[in-house]
Length: 331
Image (cartoon, rainbow, N blue to C red; front, side):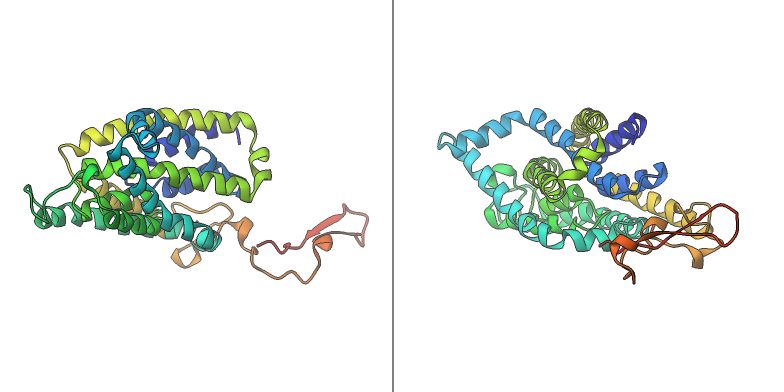
């Protein structure tokens, strides 16, 4: 990966991590467009989340300070917020390690991402309209609430909905913002809780990936990693400030229409053959493969042991030797 690619992916990660348009989906599509679809590139997408995490820590340092004081017994509202974030984080903490490999192998491809983008767009178009009918200003059970009045049961519901975002293209930000709206939070407050919930969730995902495959981080190169993190930090800070200001007076409809438009453009491009995946030259819709060529044999059982995966066969003529490669059994 060169520095140009690192900058592009950092911008995509920073802008899309906290907007309800799916950072994973956009990173998958960006890697696809840049010709980066290897395992190390998927790890890189997780690593540069560190920049987005630092952006939230910087912008919401006051809230983080309140939670730290609360954990030390010095600020009751801060303790309540910290407990609610822990409760909301628990479902992802439990389900993430259990389902990560299965979901990544089955759904981390352009077509599932496009479908998830479209489904999320439809959800957001209806979310704001539903909330306007379900909640109102006042002091009864159907009144709007802010972060300080969020109960642990409502926090748990948001955390459960966050797990739906394990499906690439769904958007963690979208599910947690919609979840916050579903329990009675205004979009602005739901977004703030979503940002704070991203601290343990994204931080945990980053640490989990690094522990799971420490060699991949070294193979990425320190310079591209640092550049990606720095660019993601700047882009995420700008995106967060803009989103909070926008949601103060607008709803989620613009993001819903954006997701539907993007998914339609990509789907039409794939179907018509204007767009194609690396290693594929589709001549029509029936020829479009959603798996990159390098992973076609990923689950095949090679009849040869790993040591025999590559063999050099002497030629029968005086011409150049022929190298025959068999797909190795990698899972």
